[in-house]
Length: 99
Image (cartoon, rainbow, N blue to C red):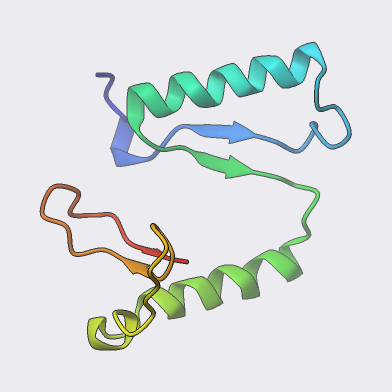
């Protein structure tokens, strides 16, 4: 396993890929995503085509959603796997998902 400098995930820039799916460049970034997930388990995606005035409110809303009390989040349930609230697993302590 590699070490992440200052506990920050690796950054992968997706800004240039719009409309280039299937190209050799797309294949390279796809391979980098796979290698990064195997090595680190996560990465930070950047996509500069989305303006900051749209990005910031969205990220703020997501932060607000995950800051809800646990009692509230567990009410979001589903019989489908990985739908609804997924979290509070001692094997993956930092993982939470709301689907």
